[in-house]
Length: 274
Image (cartoon, rainbow, N blue to C red; front, side, top):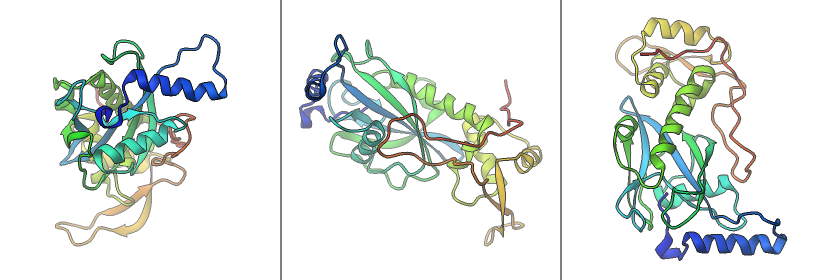
């Protein structure tokens, strides 16, 4: 949540005042709390066979120099998804390229030293984000192994909790939905898909058992009729996400909840338990 507070003059109190003025024009609800609202984005991808999260270095107080999730204040008249998209562009130089959904709400009390702030967190999954670059309100931006961050890296605000919730959401949804394909390109091999499951779940899977389950599970994959070429070894069959899976997509201006993943895998692909 790398806010451009110094450059934009947007403290939590000022954001609340702006929200109050905006609502005042429409008629405020009696007794309703007027709170500044932010968006924070848990952006995950699989790089080097590991689940990685996009983090920015905060360039302003509070938590100047600390690592944080990309995010910031919602502007007057702006939708939540549009705000998440804008903050990713401003802070990391990338537009959301894959599956974006709402993760949950956090706060408003005890999460920001400047005062009550409500955050609507989002989860973003994609195979490739392009080249990331820090914006004017961030000291830096880079990919970090998610497990290493969860195991002890200090994050600003309550972002450690938000990240943990985002990773667990991704791990759980891989069991019963085709969401794993959001980490893959338009066409992929079963081995590439298996490495996604291994990276997100943090386990090793038996290649033969996984291939049998993945190709035999309705609603997960469909054949393209093509094979890989140019690599070492035997050509491998190429697959795509099954029709109707809708495992990648988001609305850019609506705030009516998470992006829809219509297909449900039955029976589910259960992750191994320790």
